Length: 390
View (tube, rainbow, N blue to C red):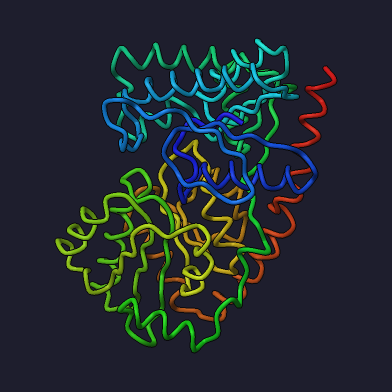
């Protein structure tokens, strides 16, 4: 697996890489993960890291030109690895992983499977790294088009991404396989904490007793909808409704804490900072409602599946990707990007506790039926077998 990121960090695509590797190992296969030099080692995984950049060894990669250097080092480490050992196939995560993986797979004459979690240019626009009106946009779009033609098979985290690949990037449907983000149902499950333990942990975090808790766990960023989340908290406060927001994640905690003060909701918001993946279920157990205010039209939102597995009702904007996960069981803010619509959706759940409980149970059932990693692992293995036979 080629992972062009600082694996492992406690969010998003890292969780998909981790759970894919674990389920493959569980089925008896060997997985080697090639990644950047920073990140957290996890027990039971073979992780090969690149050398650090000589100019700044502690640089945390993001959407920047530094990624070119990281990817050059990643390609070099990959070359050394595939020349020393034999592999059956290369699994390239994200577009950079697919591009690097293409050259490594051709050297060994083995298949390449690409794992796309959205559009490359779409994500760069979402992250404000690329302006769709700039001349660079056209060249990046052409690069994305070219990368999409390289793999022997492409798996996507959402049906929406698969549709975009066929519609906008000339990918044959015979090469594209939707493999939705999934969830470890034994790890994320309700009932991990007793009512007394929940009350104690909430008090330790400064959450007032007998107050409904809205939880968010993921990256903190504008494109993730973090400002909209805080604005929705202000709307609820102005309405006089009790609700406390437990916002868990990173980076930019200080920036968003300041925003909460400016909006007058600092007393209704608790920021935890980074939550280790191993502790995520315990923190989510403190919530009554979960929220996913992400704005992207192409990226998946795996956090929603964690919420579902915990038996939490979920508030999200009404987008095709969110409907893939939640179906008719989501509580949708109809106007995408509108904090008032987000607050209204939260309010509908605050008003009917019994409905919250019923939705949570049904969402847990939906996660078990459609989004278990055991089911996804079997599908992934079938895709591997198809490209190995072709």
